[in-house]
Image (cartoon, rainbow, N blue to C red):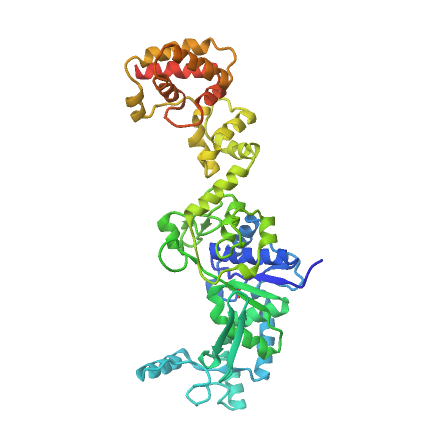
Length: 509
Ligand code: GLU
């Protein structure tokens, strides 16, 4: 049964979604699912000057990739819709009028030049201009609090530019409660009379946000710390309407890996990691920003990493699938202080998730890469599975597989120069020629049997193992790396192994 927990993710479609925004969505999702509630997507697109037309699609694609789809939102279960603020324009006017009637808001006709002049005058005497009770009724400003009803009406009818401002109460101490930060006390005299509505018919973020949260029956507002300064106004607005205030939780910032401050796209560019879940092409400039998906991250690993940037389960456990996150997530364990992003940790999560996948899953993910490689006669899925099982522990991404395993699929074209210098000496060719005969005589070509026969032969010659084993690895792999050599020899088979030995002799002698 659904509870009455309803939370929303309310991005403005101004570009791709930063991972900080995605974490806000994730915490909302986890909180909703944990409490049998509803996760809502609302598009806050009232600022048309910042609107980017592929941004909403980007946001929903990112949520889908992360497997945290919304329950209600544009085009889906539109119970309290529309869910795009630009489609709710008419509604806000109605509500701002209620505030005017209740004398909680007023018209202001000051031009930008007049406001600037006020600012300058205040600065000249070492003060800061705040549009609130300090000034609003002193006759210096042009608003409906000082003009007569008739004058106000006339100004509105003339059709000039005006705004509607909130009338912040004077001399009140507001005690706000944040689920993460506890009680916060604010002196109402420090708040300015924010603009709620503009004469172009558009509400500002503040009005639209709280009207929608109220109408959409939002129980908890879970959002980034950058909105904490707006909380006093929002609570005052709820009070002004006589509406029940939702609970608020302001999430800590995601910080740069080193130094101070919020993780920015610039940090990502500089240090070489994405700050967006999906790659994004700026339609105006053509600039492409990298994404976690395109960089080869698994979405579940990415989500796991993100979940722990600002929250902890209270135990040492770090690996959680989505179900585990839902059952463990708790707002009270979200920290107040910022969480540092770490690329190493992010890669570690991906590596852990990669190791947890079955060889069958990994082989299927590897297959499309192999198909691009011009391999003669693509091997069977079972062969690919065996390859993957031998090399996966060294991989962070599926895209690492090729460089770790190309020699399972094609003969080395060249040999590591340093290794050749060190390992290919006088007499090596003769030894390898003899080894060819030994290998050729082996019927049971399993890894263990080839290993035993080869080592017996080396022992019988009373020479160091390295003298044969190192050049042998060089011939088979091309480098001094890779898993257990006899496993590789078994995999590629007798004929191919001998061919590689003949090839290296030809190339290096
Ligand atoms: N539209 C705001 C944003 O872009 C939403 C803030 C809120 O959740 O109240 O983040």
